[in-house]
Image (spheres, rainbow, N blue to C red):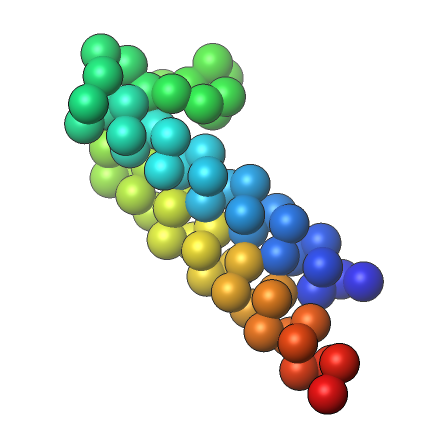
Length: 68
């Protein structure tokens, strides 16, 4: 159960990081929900993307490992 929550949280964090970075690169302001609460820089959004991808990867691999 904990690994599934980790994977879901990782996906959400990674998507928000990707949206924020994409908005910085190709738009006038970041996209997603995080910019409504905090103003972050482009490197911070990239860190969110990487951390979210790592969390999602660990959660997904742990879930697959448990099935076998």
